[in-house]
Length: 532
Ligand code: NOJ
Image 1 (cartoon, rainbow, N blue to C red):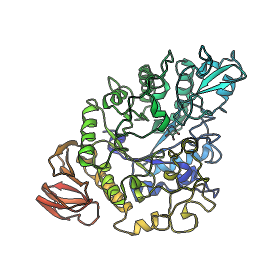
Image 2 (image 1 turned 135 degrees about the vertical axis):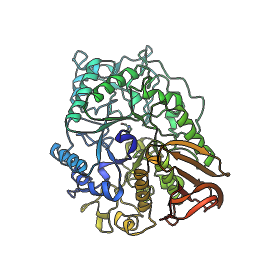
Image 3 (image 1 turned 180 degrees about the vertical axis):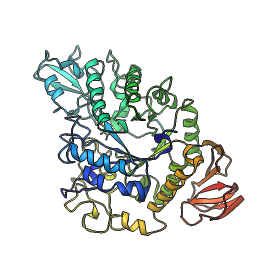
């Protein structure tokens, strides 16, 4: 197996992980400092670090003005090298975030592009004349609210921006754009990275005729409500099939790196078949198209079991699934489901077949931090009330000291009401903490071939319980039983010993046949295992 299959990925939002220089914003030196936490305390195999490149920070780094540098807020390229060495020295792989769909409007490429219609870089971005009757070329909308077209008075055309107006979309139909972005990939490969997470990967190819989108048929159950953006069916403004050829070429570049380099795509596509196409017909595109299906799943054993079955069926033979329960764009897991269910969800995430990605702070059971009106900073929330992401991006509490051990300065976002109790130091001491549950599950997953590499089979279970068996040849099989209800249940389990329980209080217990599951309780049973 490759490292990105057997391993677990941890997402670092660098602004909020650890601030080493006291300016209130996290930095690369802070990540380097906490490499032992990642490797030993927690026990993850890789980190994906959200953008740290030079940026005006309109979208907190997803508006890049130089793909081959480090923003002074986060450090220097030398700090990057030290971070990579610290991580690699602890056995943790490093995945960087590539933002291919758009740059900042202050990127030199865009400054050149908008300087004149004759500039050689004009066609690096998506420019269009007004519609015949005037106004924007078509009805495309920006995810962050309003139309996706911005009028450029000086050159008399509109440019496309699928997100903020300061994030112009690159034109991937121009081969020079692909060549420039592949050079960026080479730059980071030469600097020793182990993978790339591709921001809104499917957005890079649009309908060449730029047709208007039809209206949406209605809300889609189990997906995020994107407000005004959801009024359209986004047929033409992203996900054009030509995107697959780009990913095949990217994959060839990565496969030539001389070491296993993973490609992870941020692909928000709900239909499992359409999503699975991003693995490539010959498994020659993305290794892991992010699977976001659990993010908006109602807390219901049947629904969640159905999603797992759908994904298991959709992943092409030889492809490898992956699971996500949180990231820097979504309300916190412990807020979506509540603290007790979040522990069951953690057991689900870390025992399914496929690579899990943990979002920083979820291992502490952090909840969404309420940000008072007027103090919100996320541009999405400022443009579309209700969709702000600040509450999941607040700093990591490391200890009970001032600034939560995150900073010696004034944190860029408040740490929130849980910080005095839900910090790393306190949770390390509390045997039943969320942190110790994650640690136990991560160790178990790493130790057991059935869990990090085995097959998946659903088992019969009573109402409200999801039960599945993970088995690998020559290794003890694991059976996982998750009670999605707040009432006790009895589940039929194979003979074995409990290897983990969400309450951290049943490890070593022998079970066989009818077994009691407490409210909101999950168990992992290793078949045939001897009690501890
Ligand atoms: C997806 C990223 O995860 C999000 O944080 C960002 O705002 C958009 N892409 C635009 O780059």
